[in-house]
Length: 94
Image 1 (tube, helix red, strand yellow):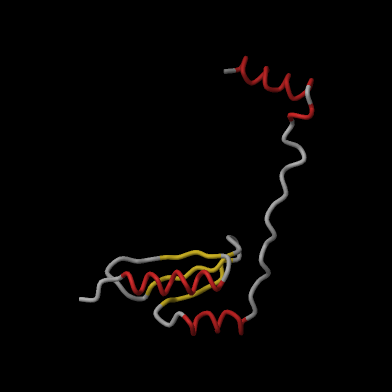
Image 2: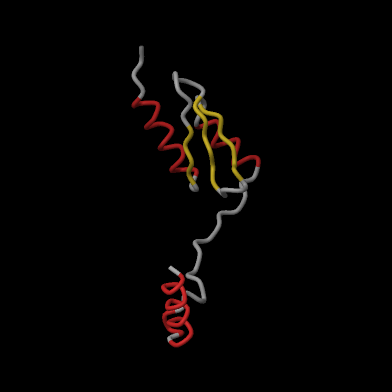
């Protein structure tokens, strides 16, 4: 294992074009939603508790219905609303 590690380091030193530096560009981070935006998403998903996860940089929706807890994550509020509605429709009504 150490030999493979040293060999890999040797390749990176002798062939810098194979290096992983600079790292690949990251996808742009969405800005924090305003309270009005978050209230609008919450009103569209009335059966869900919707919040903004600042660490994950995406919305989280927790279902207020069903026997098991359901959590949905989405970066785009439109996708979150779509996934919430799809989950509500997929749930069997007793």
